[in-house]
Length: 508
Image (cartoon, rainbow, N blue to C red):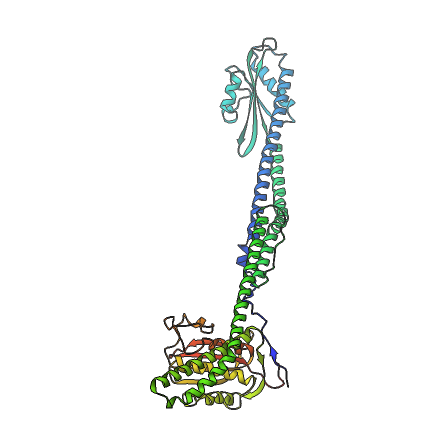
């Protein structure tokens, strides 16, 4: 003889559904907080690198050009000072030409081109100075101010320098003006080298910024990941989950708030479980205490009911009413005790291999329903079931269909291949259908709840309100499911889905 199996825990835990892990999509990763943090870091790094490179380039370019200008001005001034003292004013055209040749030879290193002019006389050597020497520069020199200016000639950078020659003793302008033009090719080459160096340094700098960006994002997201992991544990029923609080920043405050919430939730759930256990224990104790006096009352009422025919009509009506109500009370107490056994984990499953069709027929015959129910019971379907509990399941569902549905009521048994997750393999399906109005869609999710009334206006039902709940518990005890639905052609259908096991087969 096999020992009965106990499936339920002492007190049922809340129906906490473990969250399903979903692999994030590429789009979700791209729009995730990590990607946004990394992109933000890279943008900041790129902006910083470009700004630094731009400022460095500008300062370096200015320094290079200023050094060139200062050097050229100093060199030209030195050459002019060394060659002018031997001149007498006003200088002749030949002297001016010799001065330009002398200054040109002295400035071969700078590749400058020299022009000189005395007062309003033509430029020596003759040239279109208006095109090459800016008007503003010439005006400053005319006013006795040494000046220089960078300019662009045919896409090349040039430097124009103008020096007024003054008398050494008085500092008064002599009227002689010296102009020099020199190309800035070497400086442009140096500037381009700076640009290339800045570009070469900025690109790897931005790439290297990705490493600290990832490290920083990892540090910022670590508390978020821990919070997500803890939230999943809470959702899975691990209410004692807490977060480790480090630091005093906003994330630490968030962790403290989560811990406070989890602690409050754990206390509330524990209190609800305690109250639920107390209420179920109270119902079980009351049912047990009522069982004995009810048994005696039922026996007495049965005797009175048998003799009701010999009593006067009013007394007979009262006796039959008492007998009927006592029977209802007795059935309610039995249902309460049965549901209490499920809650206490004391419901036993006595499996035996039975003929399913024969088991269903016995249920219908025992209650006199064989003429009210159309059956479709294939022969030869055998399964390991608890006959008593399957009898309760079929009786509750058929009785419910006869009472609340519309005829004809049908019972069908079939074997199907399970494809749903957790229900693979051969399945035994028992369907109880009626032709009534069906069940309100809003009521369908609640039909297996205890003491649920589909019609709140109905103050009292003929049953205990526990029949479908007991059905659900019995099916669960067999590792099966039961579901209610409306048929397209009208009426409701209850489907019991059980694993089809045979002797020697694996038991779930």
